[in-house]
Length: 383
Image 1: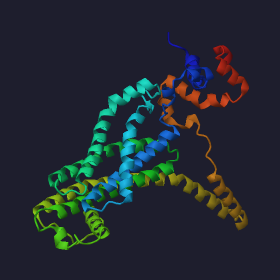
Image 2: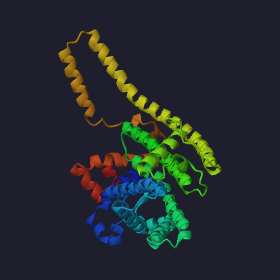
Image 3: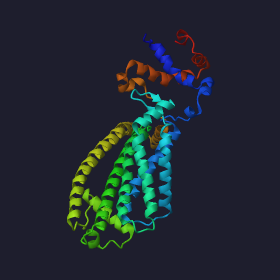
Image 4: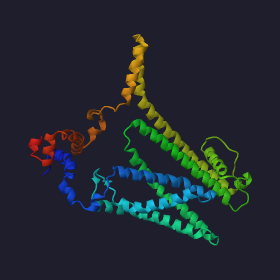
Protein backbone atom coordinates (compact mmCIF):
# COMPACT_ATOMS: atom_id res chain seq x y z
CA UNK A 1 0.00 0.00 0.00
CA UNK A 2 1.08 3.58 -0.64
CA UNK A 3 2.52 5.27 2.47
CA UNK A 4 0.84 8.35 3.80
CA UNK A 5 2.36 11.81 3.76
CA UNK A 6 4.05 11.50 7.13
CA UNK A 7 5.72 8.21 6.29
CA UNK A 8 7.26 9.71 3.16
CA UNK A 9 8.24 12.83 5.08
CA UNK A 10 9.82 10.92 7.96
CA UNK A 11 11.60 8.44 5.69
CA UNK A 12 13.24 11.27 3.79
CA UNK A 13 13.85 13.45 6.83
CA UNK A 14 15.75 10.97 8.93
CA UNK A 15 17.61 9.18 6.14
CA UNK A 16 20.71 11.33 6.62
CA UNK A 17 20.62 10.78 10.40
CA UNK A 18 20.34 7.05 9.98
CA UNK A 19 23.24 7.01 7.56
CA UNK A 20 25.66 8.31 10.16
CA UNK A 21 24.86 5.75 12.85
CA UNK A 22 28.00 3.96 14.07
CA UNK A 23 26.47 0.53 13.46
CA UNK A 24 25.97 1.27 9.77
CA UNK A 25 29.41 2.82 9.43
CA UNK A 26 31.03 -0.37 10.68
CA UNK A 27 29.24 -2.41 8.03
CA UNK A 28 30.50 -0.28 5.18
CA UNK A 29 33.32 -1.74 3.14
CA UNK A 30 36.54 0.13 2.61
CA UNK A 31 35.84 0.62 -1.10
CA UNK A 32 32.28 1.79 -0.46
CA UNK A 33 33.60 4.39 1.96
CA UNK A 34 35.75 5.81 -0.88
CA UNK A 35 32.75 6.69 -3.05
CA UNK A 36 32.53 10.48 -3.35
CA UNK A 37 29.38 12.53 -3.48
CA UNK A 38 29.01 14.69 -6.62
CA UNK A 39 28.89 17.79 -4.42
CA UNK A 40 31.85 16.96 -2.19
CA UNK A 41 34.81 19.33 -1.90
CA UNK A 42 37.23 16.75 -3.29
CA UNK A 43 34.99 16.15 -6.30
CA UNK A 44 34.81 19.90 -6.91
CA UNK A 45 38.59 20.25 -6.73
CA UNK A 46 39.06 17.30 -9.07
CA UNK A 47 36.64 18.80 -11.61
CA UNK A 48 38.33 22.22 -11.41
CA UNK A 49 41.73 20.65 -12.09
CA UNK A 50 40.20 18.73 -14.99
CA UNK A 51 38.86 22.03 -16.40
CA UNK A 52 42.35 23.55 -16.02
CA UNK A 53 43.97 20.73 -18.00
CA UNK A 54 41.32 20.91 -20.71
CA UNK A 55 41.83 24.68 -21.00
CA UNK A 56 45.59 24.15 -21.22
CA UNK A 57 45.13 21.62 -24.03
CA UNK A 58 42.83 24.01 -25.88
CA UNK A 59 45.58 26.62 -25.88
CA UNK A 60 48.74 24.50 -26.09
CA UNK A 61 47.82 21.88 -28.71
CA UNK A 62 46.98 24.36 -31.53
CA UNK A 63 50.22 26.22 -30.73
CA UNK A 64 52.18 23.16 -31.85
CA UNK A 65 51.96 24.45 -35.46
CA UNK A 66 54.47 27.14 -34.46
CA UNK A 67 57.04 24.39 -33.70
CA UNK A 68 58.03 25.82 -30.33
CA UNK A 69 61.09 24.34 -28.62
CA UNK A 70 60.42 22.06 -25.65
CA UNK A 71 60.91 23.48 -22.18
CA UNK A 72 60.44 22.47 -18.57
CA UNK A 73 56.86 23.75 -18.37
CA UNK A 74 55.61 21.88 -21.44
CA UNK A 75 57.36 18.67 -20.36
CA UNK A 76 55.92 18.89 -16.85
CA UNK A 77 52.41 19.58 -18.15
CA UNK A 78 52.66 16.67 -20.60
CA UNK A 79 53.44 14.13 -17.89
CA UNK A 80 51.08 15.72 -15.37
CA UNK A 81 48.25 15.54 -17.87
CA UNK A 82 49.05 11.92 -18.70
CA UNK A 83 49.09 10.93 -15.01
CA UNK A 84 45.81 12.73 -14.35
CA UNK A 85 43.87 11.21 -17.27
CA UNK A 86 45.21 7.76 -16.42
CA UNK A 87 44.07 8.05 -12.82
CA UNK A 88 40.77 9.68 -13.81
CA UNK A 89 39.38 6.43 -15.21
CA UNK A 90 39.56 4.41 -11.96
CA UNK A 91 38.59 7.52 -10.04
CA UNK A 92 35.38 7.81 -12.08
CA UNK A 93 34.26 4.46 -10.64
CA UNK A 94 34.11 6.14 -7.22
CA UNK A 95 32.17 9.25 -8.22
CA UNK A 96 28.51 9.20 -7.24
CA UNK A 97 26.05 10.39 -9.84
CA UNK A 98 22.55 11.80 -10.07
CA UNK A 99 19.99 9.40 -11.53
CA UNK A 100 17.27 10.34 -13.97
CA UNK A 101 14.86 10.50 -11.07
CA UNK A 102 17.02 13.08 -9.28
CA UNK A 103 18.41 10.71 -6.63
CA UNK A 104 22.10 10.63 -5.76
CA UNK A 105 23.42 7.10 -6.30
CA UNK A 106 26.32 6.22 -3.98
CA UNK A 107 26.43 2.41 -4.16
CA UNK A 108 29.79 1.32 -5.53
CA UNK A 109 28.43 -1.39 -7.80
CA UNK A 110 25.86 0.84 -9.44
CA UNK A 111 28.31 3.74 -9.75
CA UNK A 112 30.90 1.55 -11.50
CA UNK A 113 28.25 -0.04 -13.73
CA UNK A 114 26.94 3.40 -14.72
CA UNK A 115 30.46 4.57 -15.65
CA UNK A 116 31.11 1.44 -17.72
CA UNK A 117 27.88 1.98 -19.65
CA UNK A 118 28.34 5.71 -20.29
CA UNK A 119 31.85 7.19 -20.39
CA UNK A 120 34.24 4.26 -20.03
CA UNK A 121 34.86 3.45 -23.71
CA UNK A 122 35.20 7.10 -24.87
CA UNK A 123 37.63 7.71 -21.99
CA UNK A 124 39.54 4.55 -22.92
CA UNK A 125 39.95 5.71 -26.53
CA UNK A 126 41.09 9.18 -25.44
CA UNK A 127 43.54 7.71 -22.94
CA UNK A 128 44.94 5.44 -25.66
CA UNK A 129 45.49 8.51 -27.84
CA UNK A 130 47.40 10.17 -24.98
CA UNK A 131 49.74 7.19 -24.57
CA UNK A 132 50.20 6.77 -28.33
CA UNK A 133 51.08 10.44 -28.63
CA UNK A 134 53.71 10.07 -25.90
CA UNK A 135 55.16 6.96 -27.54
CA UNK A 136 55.35 8.63 -30.96
CA UNK A 137 57.04 11.72 -29.49
CA UNK A 138 59.69 9.55 -27.82
CA UNK A 139 60.16 7.61 -31.04
CA UNK A 140 60.61 10.69 -33.23
CA UNK A 141 62.68 12.74 -30.79
CA UNK A 142 66.14 13.26 -32.19
CA UNK A 143 65.55 11.04 -35.22
CA UNK A 144 64.70 12.53 -38.62
CA UNK A 145 64.27 9.16 -40.34
CA UNK A 146 60.58 8.93 -39.56
CA UNK A 147 59.31 11.78 -41.71
CA UNK A 148 56.25 9.80 -42.77
CA UNK A 149 55.31 9.34 -39.11
CA UNK A 150 55.33 13.09 -38.49
CA UNK A 151 51.84 13.44 -39.95
CA UNK A 152 50.60 10.62 -37.71
CA UNK A 153 52.05 12.38 -34.67
CA UNK A 154 50.40 15.61 -35.71
CA UNK A 155 47.07 13.80 -36.13
CA UNK A 156 47.37 12.16 -32.69
CA UNK A 157 48.29 15.47 -31.12
CA UNK A 158 45.21 17.23 -32.44
CA UNK A 159 43.01 14.20 -31.67
CA UNK A 160 43.62 14.96 -28.01
CA UNK A 161 41.25 17.90 -28.43
CA UNK A 162 38.36 15.40 -28.56
CA UNK A 163 38.27 15.27 -24.77
CA UNK A 164 37.33 18.96 -24.72
CA UNK A 165 33.76 17.67 -25.06
CA UNK A 166 33.88 17.11 -21.30
CA UNK A 167 34.24 20.85 -20.72
CA UNK A 168 30.56 21.69 -21.05
CA UNK A 169 29.50 19.10 -18.47
CA UNK A 170 32.14 20.33 -16.02
CA UNK A 171 31.17 23.98 -16.49
CA UNK A 172 27.47 23.21 -16.00
CA UNK A 173 28.21 21.27 -12.80
CA UNK A 174 30.37 24.11 -11.49
CA UNK A 175 27.84 26.84 -12.26
CA UNK A 176 25.10 24.90 -10.46
CA UNK A 177 27.05 25.51 -7.25
CA UNK A 178 26.85 29.30 -7.64
CA UNK A 179 24.08 30.84 -5.54
CA UNK A 180 24.36 34.52 -6.51
CA UNK A 181 22.53 35.56 -9.68
CA UNK A 182 24.96 38.43 -10.20
CA UNK A 183 28.00 36.15 -9.92
CA UNK A 184 26.33 33.59 -12.20
CA UNK A 185 25.72 36.24 -14.84
CA UNK A 186 29.32 37.46 -14.58
CA UNK A 187 30.61 33.91 -15.01
CA UNK A 188 28.36 33.44 -18.04
CA UNK A 189 29.81 36.58 -19.64
CA UNK A 190 33.34 35.36 -18.89
CA UNK A 191 32.49 32.02 -20.49
CA UNK A 192 31.34 33.75 -23.69
CA UNK A 193 34.56 35.80 -23.84
CA UNK A 194 36.65 32.66 -23.29
CA UNK A 195 34.82 30.78 -26.03
CA UNK A 196 35.37 33.63 -28.50
CA UNK A 197 39.07 33.78 -27.66
CA UNK A 198 39.50 30.00 -28.08
CA UNK A 199 37.64 30.18 -31.38
CA UNK A 200 39.94 32.97 -32.64
CA UNK A 201 42.97 31.16 -31.22
CA UNK A 202 42.22 27.98 -33.17
CA UNK A 203 41.56 29.95 -36.36
CA UNK A 204 44.84 31.84 -35.92
CA UNK A 205 46.86 28.67 -35.41
CA UNK A 206 45.18 27.03 -38.39
CA UNK A 207 45.91 30.08 -40.54
CA UNK A 208 49.59 30.09 -39.63
CA UNK A 209 49.93 26.31 -39.94
CA UNK A 210 48.40 26.43 -43.40
CA UNK A 211 50.79 29.14 -44.58
CA UNK A 212 53.88 27.59 -42.98
CA UNK A 213 53.37 24.03 -44.21
CA UNK A 214 51.99 24.55 -47.71
CA UNK A 215 54.17 23.00 -50.39
CA UNK A 216 53.65 25.95 -52.72
CA UNK A 217 56.28 28.65 -52.25
CA UNK A 218 53.60 31.31 -52.55
CA UNK A 219 51.98 31.62 -49.12
CA UNK A 220 51.13 34.47 -46.82
CA UNK A 221 53.92 33.42 -44.41
CA UNK A 222 56.52 33.77 -47.18
CA UNK A 223 54.91 36.93 -48.53
CA UNK A 224 54.96 38.65 -45.14
CA UNK A 225 58.42 37.21 -44.31
CA UNK A 226 57.33 36.13 -40.84
CA UNK A 227 58.89 32.66 -40.73
CA UNK A 228 62.08 34.04 -39.16
CA UNK A 229 60.30 36.32 -36.68
CA UNK A 230 59.77 35.58 -33.00
CA UNK A 231 56.92 33.40 -31.80
CA UNK A 232 55.13 36.36 -30.21
CA UNK A 233 55.18 38.30 -33.49
CA UNK A 234 53.93 35.34 -35.55
CA UNK A 235 51.18 34.46 -33.08
CA UNK A 236 49.88 38.00 -32.57
CA UNK A 237 49.86 38.59 -36.34
CA UNK A 238 47.84 35.39 -36.89
CA UNK A 239 45.51 36.21 -33.98
CA UNK A 240 44.90 39.70 -35.36
CA UNK A 241 43.94 38.15 -38.71
CA UNK A 242 41.50 35.78 -36.96
CA UNK A 243 39.94 38.60 -34.94
CA UNK A 244 39.57 40.69 -38.08
CA UNK A 245 37.46 37.88 -39.57
CA UNK A 246 35.15 38.24 -36.57
CA UNK A 247 34.78 41.95 -37.27
CA UNK A 248 37.24 43.24 -34.66
CA UNK A 249 39.48 45.57 -36.67
CA UNK A 250 41.30 44.90 -39.94
CA UNK A 251 44.72 43.74 -41.12
CA UNK A 252 46.64 43.84 -44.41
CA UNK A 253 47.24 40.09 -44.61
CA UNK A 254 45.52 38.25 -47.45
CA UNK A 255 45.48 34.70 -48.87
CA UNK A 256 47.96 34.16 -51.69
CA UNK A 257 47.03 30.71 -53.00
CA UNK A 258 43.96 28.61 -53.59
CA UNK A 259 44.18 26.63 -50.36
CA UNK A 260 44.53 29.74 -48.21
CA UNK A 261 41.63 31.38 -50.03
CA UNK A 262 39.41 28.35 -49.36
CA UNK A 263 40.39 28.49 -45.67
CA UNK A 264 39.59 32.20 -45.56
CA UNK A 265 36.15 31.63 -47.10
CA UNK A 266 35.35 28.83 -44.64
CA UNK A 267 36.59 31.02 -41.79
CA UNK A 268 34.34 33.89 -42.88
CA UNK A 269 31.27 31.60 -42.87
CA UNK A 270 32.17 30.23 -39.45
CA UNK A 271 32.80 33.72 -38.06
CA UNK A 272 29.42 34.89 -39.34
CA UNK A 273 27.66 32.26 -37.24
CA UNK A 274 29.98 32.85 -34.27
CA UNK A 275 29.39 36.60 -34.38
CA UNK A 276 25.60 36.10 -34.41
CA UNK A 277 25.88 33.82 -31.38
CA UNK A 278 28.19 36.31 -29.66
CA UNK A 279 25.81 39.25 -30.11
CA UNK A 280 22.78 37.24 -29.00
CA UNK A 281 24.54 35.88 -25.90
CA UNK A 282 25.84 39.27 -24.82
CA UNK A 283 22.44 40.91 -25.28
CA UNK A 284 20.74 38.25 -23.15
CA UNK A 285 23.38 38.32 -20.41
CA UNK A 286 23.59 42.11 -20.22
CA UNK A 287 19.79 42.35 -20.10
CA UNK A 288 19.75 39.86 -17.24
CA UNK A 289 22.38 41.84 -15.33
CA UNK A 290 20.47 45.07 -15.83
CA UNK A 291 17.28 43.44 -14.56
CA UNK A 292 19.10 42.29 -11.43
CA UNK A 293 20.38 45.81 -10.79
CA UNK A 294 17.13 47.56 -11.72
CA UNK A 295 15.29 46.91 -8.44
CA UNK A 296 18.22 48.07 -6.29
CA UNK A 297 18.62 51.26 -8.34
CA UNK A 298 14.91 52.06 -8.08
CA UNK A 299 14.96 51.68 -4.29
CA UNK A 300 18.02 53.93 -4.03
CA UNK A 301 16.33 56.56 -6.21
CA UNK A 302 13.19 56.51 -4.05
CA UNK A 303 15.27 56.93 -0.91
CA UNK A 304 17.30 59.75 -2.46
CA UNK A 305 14.11 61.59 -3.50
CA UNK A 306 12.65 61.16 -0.03
CA UNK A 307 15.77 62.55 1.67
CA UNK A 308 15.94 65.53 -0.70
CA UNK A 309 12.26 66.46 -0.45
CA UNK A 310 12.39 66.42 3.35
CA UNK A 311 15.63 68.43 3.53
CA UNK A 312 17.44 65.80 5.58
CA UNK A 313 20.84 66.97 6.77
CA UNK A 314 23.96 65.67 5.04
CA UNK A 315 25.26 64.17 8.27
CA UNK A 316 22.17 62.02 8.65
CA UNK A 317 22.18 61.15 4.96
CA UNK A 318 25.74 59.85 5.22
CA UNK A 319 24.84 57.74 8.26
CA UNK A 320 21.86 56.26 6.40
CA UNK A 321 23.88 55.41 3.27
CA UNK A 322 26.74 53.89 5.31
CA UNK A 323 24.27 51.74 7.23
CA UNK A 324 22.59 50.54 4.02
CA UNK A 325 25.94 49.75 2.41
CA UNK A 326 26.91 47.61 5.41
CA UNK A 327 23.50 45.95 5.33
CA UNK A 328 23.94 44.99 1.67
CA UNK A 329 27.16 43.17 2.57
CA UNK A 330 25.37 40.98 5.11
CA UNK A 331 23.94 37.58 4.10
CA UNK A 332 20.57 37.88 2.45
CA UNK A 333 17.41 36.88 4.22
CA UNK A 334 16.07 33.37 3.71
CA UNK A 335 13.96 32.88 0.61
CA UNK A 336 10.44 31.87 1.56
CA UNK A 337 8.83 28.87 -0.12
CA UNK A 338 5.82 30.95 -1.16
CA UNK A 339 8.04 33.29 -3.22
CA UNK A 340 9.42 30.50 -5.44
CA UNK A 341 6.82 29.79 -8.12
CA UNK A 342 8.58 26.75 -9.60
CA UNK A 343 8.24 24.82 -6.33
CA UNK A 344 4.47 24.83 -6.74
CA UNK A 345 4.78 22.58 -9.81
CA UNK A 346 6.66 19.81 -7.98
CA UNK A 347 4.95 16.47 -7.25
CA UNK A 348 3.63 15.98 -3.74
CA UNK A 349 6.23 13.39 -2.74
CA UNK A 350 9.10 15.55 -4.01
CA UNK A 351 7.62 18.53 -2.15
CA UNK A 352 7.64 16.50 1.08
CA UNK A 353 11.26 15.50 0.56
CA UNK A 354 12.22 19.12 -0.12
CA UNK A 355 10.54 20.31 3.06
CA UNK A 356 12.16 17.49 4.99
CA UNK A 357 15.70 18.46 3.96
CA UNK A 358 14.94 22.15 4.51
CA UNK A 359 13.28 22.02 7.95
CA UNK A 360 14.19 18.79 9.73
CA UNK A 361 17.85 19.82 10.35
CA UNK A 362 16.54 22.88 12.16
CA UNK A 363 14.16 20.84 14.30
CA UNK A 364 16.69 18.19 15.25
CA UNK A 365 18.97 20.80 16.80
CA UNK A 366 16.65 20.49 19.79
CA UNK A 367 17.52 17.38 21.86
CA UNK A 368 13.87 16.33 22.07
CA UNK A 369 13.36 16.03 18.29
CA UNK A 370 16.86 14.64 17.77
CA UNK A 371 16.17 11.81 20.26
CA UNK A 372 12.92 10.86 18.57
CA UNK A 373 14.48 11.10 15.13
CA UNK A 374 17.34 8.71 15.94
CA UNK A 375 15.17 6.27 17.81
CA UNK A 376 12.56 6.32 15.01
CA UNK A 377 9.69 6.88 17.41
CA UNK A 378 6.07 6.27 16.65
CA UNK A 379 4.85 8.44 13.81
CA UNK A 380 2.03 9.87 15.91
CA UNK A 381 4.51 10.97 18.59
CA UNK A 382 6.78 12.56 15.98
CA UNK A 383 3.84 14.28 14.34
